[in-house]
Length: 189
Image (cartoon, rainbow, N blue to C red):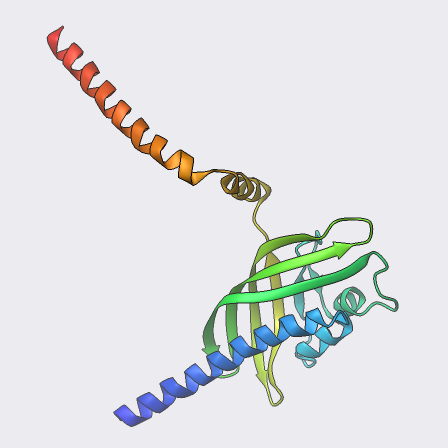
């Protein structure tokens, strides 16, 4: 391969990666229409068994029947008032000419009837296939933090770092002096 051929191949690969990133951002826009039936259009309709893991569901949706029942039920969910998605920090790995793995973060907000809106950050992963109409999903997984990690994140937000940071330095100084005193005492005994 010549240097020009390598540069052209790398440019083509980067174009595909950018197309996938744009598609993932477009996916958020489709969810944000509030017509979740449209999300099915983002999937490879030729895929025999699509895989979908929704963070709030206990089990995977494997195949078209459960996926359609979840995304496009006969009537809309009467409890869900609205949701909003925003995708960021998208990374893409091309694993074949027509297959890619993508990971990213999704900021998710939702309002259920009778409750205040909720939001969270969700780790995402997907496998996509290139079709004549563009990239389409064949696998989608939402991976929220474990409850312990999520609670830790909430507790970290409660720290007043302006007031706490000086105490970290003071604590280090006290521990060092205390340790030195203990070593001197042990050496003199």
